[in-house]
Structure formats: structure tokens, C-alpha cells
Image 1: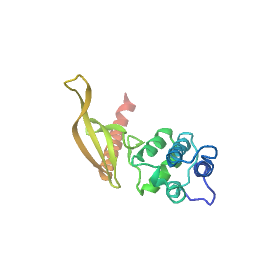
Image 2: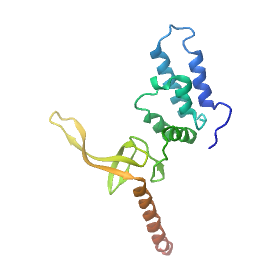
Image 3: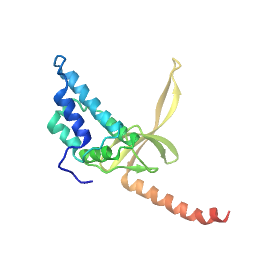
Length: 181
């Protein structure tokens, strides 16, 4: 994806919110911060186009450090779930990381998938690995159900590549058998 000289639709929306908000209400940073956060989520979920450097530009132009939040992975989750690949690419560019693709889907924090024969949930993403945890449901003394950690996996990019290659080889080996049936 190349960077263009014009502002993307997502950046334009955020610029509009930044410059036009609170024209008829008293100024409050909490209001502008929440509005900016919601504007980015709206741009993602409505399918607006993002420029590759938009997340970086949010920091330069709109003081994003105050409103993007420590749980900024929610933007990536929303982009993946909405299928907004331009937002995915912009987020990945900002985080300086390549996507992890497992079961033909981008992995985000909270994503559930199967690994090592267990259902796991991604709890964090780093440059070269993800952390995914397997849980089991347990009932506490007060009858509430909670998830208890069974196993924590550190899944490196090389592990993902190995599993993909093995799956392709298995599919190739089964293809003649399925064609004969």
C-alpha cells in the first residue's frame, strides 16, 4: 500500500471532529478525547479507507496519546472483524509488525482459534510471537463460572509457518484419496 498526498476518508473524518467539535458546548478534554476515539472506531467499522500512515498521523496531529488508550488493540480487532484491510494495514504499519495469519484469519487480541489440539485465545501480540492461552471453565464456591488458565503458548512466526506447511502437505496427500471416493 502506498502513501498518497491527499488525506484519507478516515483522517478527514478525524480532522473534522478535531476542528469542529465543541463549537456549541463548553470545552472539555474528556469530550474531545472520547469523540476522537469514537471517530476512529466509526471510520473503521463503517468501512472508510485509511492511509498507511494514518495512525502515526493521529499522534502528530490530534494528540492521540491522550485518547487512543492503552487498549489500542481494540482498533485492530474492529478492523479485522469489519474486514477493513486498509485500517488493518495502517494499524500494522503504526505497530511496525506483520500480521499473524492463523486458520486464514488475522489474529487479534481476544481472537480464538485452535492450537496444539486446544481451543486458545490470543492475549497479546509482539513483533515475532503471540501469546495464546487455553482455558477451562470452573465453577467457584459462589456458583459463578470463570475461566481458569490451563496452558500458555508462545507462538512464534516460525511455528505458524510450520503448521501452515504441514496442513498444506496433509491436504495434498488427502486430495487423491478424496478424488477416488
